[in-house]
Image (tube, rainbow, N blue to C red; front, top):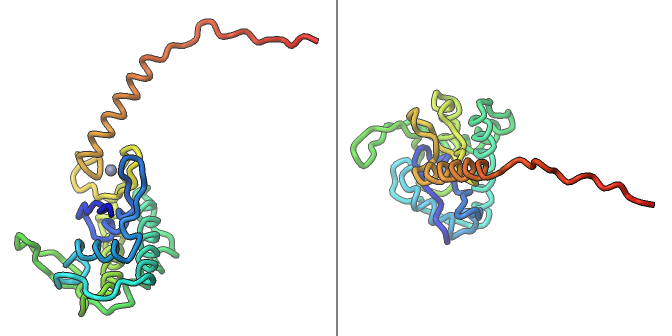
Length: 207
Ligand SMILES: [Zn+2]
């Protein structure tokens, strides 16, 4: 089972990025019940409002619900990356996911004691995680960070990230290296191409 990347810019984008690519092959990091349970465990407090690990049954229906949420986040994310607002149908779906569990804003510390504004809900079930991730995407789309949302421009990379500094152009340093190598290869390939000085003459069929 391949683990999807956890860029950490936003838990909603991390869910979007469970649709990922390794050597031009697409993977689904939440394709099965064990894969989703593993992803939730890795997401930890970011989807539980403070509790360590989401605790609850991960069944087929939950996998389907997470895929639905991921599809909406990816669609709205792609529009935001193009500078477009989300469609009403996307917002309605995100609102519905977020509304399913009562939650309230809380300031919670990270490992280094820095405070972060997070939605908090009682319990740490996977259903709470669905609501928390939707709330994160709504906060992202409704705030100034929407303008930072980018689709990684590296070849074959389907990941999203937040351009939180001007010199950040790719989701990861590895993608930056690949993109520069691809651009260099394309330049060399173009330099090797010579125009045809004597193109073949057209042949007139004889009867
Ligand atoms: Zn990338």
